[in-house]
Every structure is written in C-alpha cells, then in structure tokens.
Length: 340
View 1 (cartoon, rainbow, N blue to C red):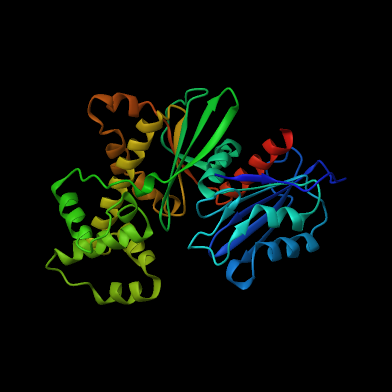
View 2: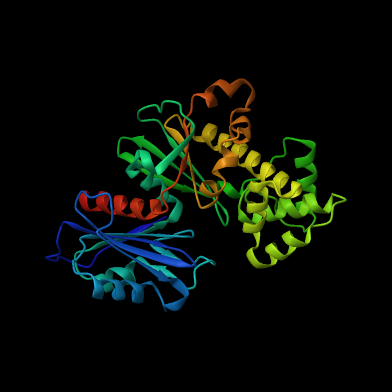
C-alpha cells in the first residue's frame, strides 16, 4: 500500500503539483499547474545515472521554479508504507525521504505505477485512445487496465462513497489457462523449467519471445539468417516487426498467439471487476501492434466467454496511445491529496 507524508506548514503555492513516473530505465518528473491536464514542465532522466530519486528531484527543482503543495510518484514495483525496493529499480524510493527533500507542507505519496496509470485514464482525451470495441461505457462503471510491456500489469478503477478510486493488481501473475491444444503444449513447454507459468510469461515482451521460441522448437523450419541477426541486435522487437510484416510465418504465428492470449486475459479481468466502464490496454506493446489488434483476434478471444459473451460484447475496449498516462495519473492522484 502507499503512504502520504509531509513535514509541517509551508507557504508553498497551492497551484503547483509535482508528478513522477519512475522506472528502471527512465524517471519522468513534471510540474502541473492548477486544473491543467498537461505538464507545464517535464524532464526525463536516465535512472541509472543518478544515485537515487532524491537526487533527481533536487536536480529537477533546481531547474524549475515552483514549490509544490502535493507530489505523487508512480513507481514500477510494489509499495509498502510509502516505500518500494522493486528489483527493476536501481535504488529504493521512499516517500519520507522525498518529503524531506521537497520541503515543508508538500504532501508526498508513492504509489504503484499501475495505480498511477489507472488514475491517468480519467484524464485521457479522445486523441489519446483508439477503440477496438466502440461500445458505450456505463457511467460510474468499473474500469479495467491491462498493460502488456516488459511484463503484464493490471489495475482497475472503482466508484463508491469515496468517489473514484484506482487500484493496482498483480493479476498478470495468475495461472495461465490454455484454451487450445497448442496453448496446452505451450504451457507444458514453459513449465519445463520448473517455474510458475503465468499469463505474463505469454502476454508480454518476454512472453512473445517465449511463444516464438516454443513455436520454432516444434517446427521443422530453421530460423532465417536475417531474423537471427535481427534478434541478436533488437531482441523481441525483431520478432514483433517480422510478425507484423508477416516476413516470417513463425514470428507471425507467435504474435497471433500473444494477441489472442492478451484478449482472453483482458476478458477475464473485465469479468473479474465487471468493467462496464471500459477496458483499457496500456503499456508499450499495444500501440506498436495496433494493426494486428485491429484484425479481430483480440476481440474474438476477449468475448469468447460462453454464456457471458453478450456481456463482453457490450464493454468498450480502447488502446492507450499516450505514453504519459502514468505521469498524468500521478498528477491526478496528487490533486486528490491536495483537495483532501
């Protein structure tokens, strides 16, 4: 769970919010003016080139004037009592240390990045999304977020007596449930290393590589030299490109398996939280493979839920195009803290 911390009164401007989106590769920091849904100032820092987030925050604040009244940082990892030491971050993040560095009167919170992304959905505009299923969202209905990237992140938004609330989830680590004979073979192949077979091991960047290697291993076709060289240089991105272009049949088939699995799990999440307010596909993968998502395999798997197929058909599904969604969500969360 997150935590909020501040250290006494201040004359800080009530019109300024500090938001952050911190990952293992990059850390984004931004200042938001009151009631604005776009950053007034934005900087991106290579995470590994700094000793910690406090140093990055101090560097940012020395370059940009304004004393924030509230700050929220979204981080790629589980948060407990305002602190995270996720393995994919090069250093821990602690809300207390940040509050001391920013100064008196600033309410500081550290939240999971999927919670930040979920908060950000409410600030997205029409140009920030592309519909895969252009159904009407139920006003006040729950919203689901399923984000395939390096891993498979999930979150959701609820509405209740306390208003809108965003929640992180670790549902990407739920057991992978095969739906076909091919997927059953894939599951057994993945289980061969003795590890847990989750949806993340199929539906993510590393998941696409897993599926490709499985399909290549069961095929009589050898990997073409051009793809072998491309994979050595670009990794899973090369499989994605070859699959999208249909230059290699196994890369294309691997992409189809991942897309179908993505749809099936997104449908599972939609049913789990009854996401009548919509399902949003976040993360870096969906925008890159949008043409394949639009071909129909995703939605067929999404709605293939037996007696509840008609329920899924009425749920809007949208791909998030705005890469600053987590940053927007952090700002929106900070705004709720300030208002509270």
